[in-house]
Image 1: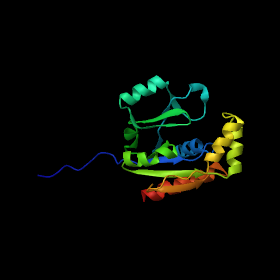
Image 2: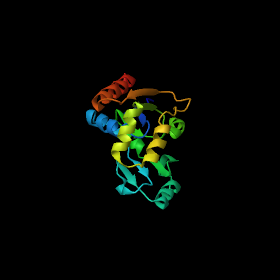
Image 3: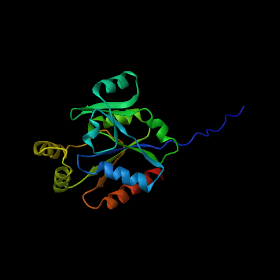
Image 4: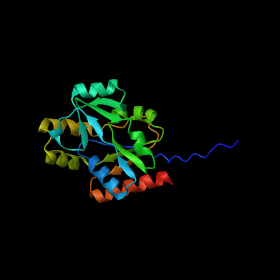
Length: 190
């Protein structure tokens, strides 16, 4: 008796894009998704007001978020900066036939994510301190004290024990960072 061949589409890796506020994670993710239509992005669910702007996310209230946790909707969820964040289990559907699925994660949840997802990689986006300061000031979402707090956290190291980490410098032109990240993703697929 022969076993039928597995004809399910290959699953792409979950690619966490991490880095300090203002480093350009969302811009990099958008640019990568445009460059490769099979590279998908996962929207986070966040207890942030819809008018807060910034990234593309699904805003929910604290009560709605808790109901989603209790309904086991999330593959991964965590608290950071006074907000709650969740990655829906739908991420597994996005992985089917994809080059990969990009997701903006907090450093504190990376080891947990590595255990949750069977094929997990990290792209750590960096930028020079003066570039971060200018970007944070320019976006106008944080007051001066919050900008200082975010800059102080910018140099925090990634947790020990991550298996696949690649660094991309986004201090200069976004297009250069996109090319660098594309090369990393393609090399991993080879």
